[in-house]
Length: 151
Image 1 (cartoon, rainbow, N blue to C red):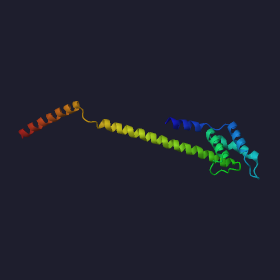
Image 2: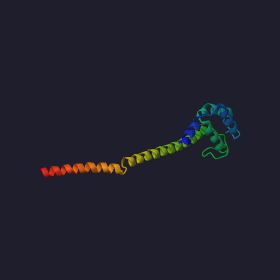
Image 3: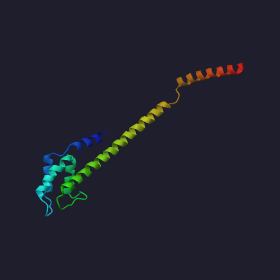
Image 4: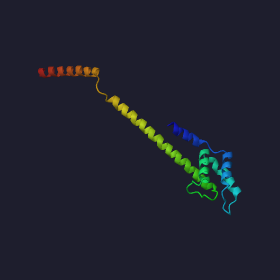
């Protein structure tokens, strides 16, 4: 559960202006399509990527630079939209996995509590309980015999 909380905390830290500038600098080493203004791309990076976590931005840039980003060109600098979508996919994938783990842990805990409550509720009779139950039943049995003989 702590790992899930740490992951959510990690992804809640948004990318700083400096981190976005570094990302655009690294990606600017890639080719820019002929009709694209590189300065406009860098400016759009600054405007749109501030909503992305620092971790997702770093991981996204690393994947792109190393050619491991599925769906992103290995040759051309990604547009802001492409990078934004890729980073959001990284975040969403991690968050959904963390949520699945969290639910599994919570369900396991709830099941254990139910099983424990069931064991406590249906625990075998202890000697004291047996003796008390025998007294009650003997008392009832005696009253029934008395009632039957009276009729």
